[in-house]
Image 1 (tube, rainbow, N blue to C red):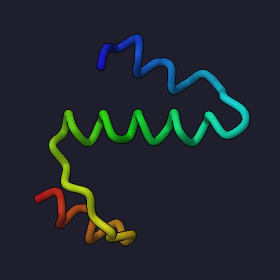
Image 2 (image 1 turned 120 degrees about the vertical axis):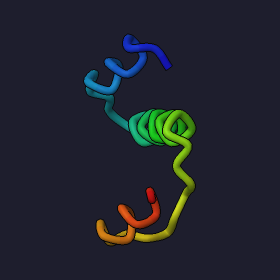
Image 3 (image 1 turned 45 degrees about the vertical axis):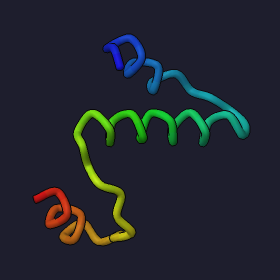
Image 4 (image 1 turned 180 degrees about the horizontal axis):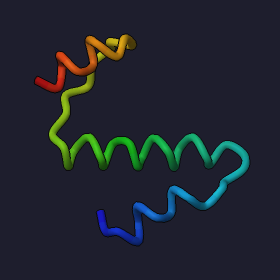
Length: 51
């Protein structure tokens, strides 16, 4: 994902396309960072999952 693509997050979207766009960006960032999906909602557990 290029810097230009990341900057698109700043553009406000309205309607159902907004959530889809955010999910796509989140998936790309998780792939780049190689973060495994977790069901943990607590910040502490999120940090532990990163380690």
